[in-house]
Image (cartoon, rainbow, N blue to C red; front, side, top):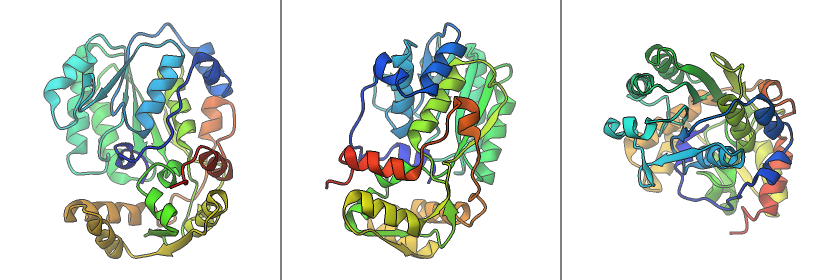
Length: 313
């Protein structure tokens, strides 16, 4: 679960408000964006109320960049299932952050990306940063569909590892609170990525030069198995958390038990099993390449999440 699957999760805990002062204190992300930025026009943030979208919107606003936070029910209507509203959302915008819901690997995503690319090109958009999944073959097909349709629009692709925040404000929060992390990851290791690092990279690519055509693969600095992650989560949360590995079909049954439809549950279980087979275990230094600093360590994430009350439930 990398990105948009969790982006629309309704369970959101603490929401930080970023000012220019607090954002620049985060280090290289703020300074890189400022020093490399041109005078920016409006940026459309799709899925603007999701986990990644709201962070990107907050950071852009902190830099003084005009932001349009698009969502299905927000002030700027934007629905991936309704192409009729896209042109209005893009009208007059200079750049866009694209986070496709529910995931770039789902059937129909490539068609949606091609359609968005055509609308973006016709609207005169200058730059797009696309959130994608690391090691997802079908997501790569959707990337190419957008690339082929957007013409002269500058495209940067950000492929993300599994979000660390899935444990603190996403689909696995209840599992951590319940003490059993049931998931189809086997013994594979994953370099969990802190979403704040992702948002900093996206903002740098949106506001600075030198990122056109780039494909960044973002990971944390260390790979952990889910068993190791559960142990660290338990220490930070102050309660035992045990990893329970299950098969893909068994996990689909778990999801259906929580009210998810059979097809959606099957898709997610199959996606997780594909992503967490070990082929994504290696780390990269792309966060450092873009931001000039190391990616956040998983232990630091757990401590910050515990401090902010993520697991007080």
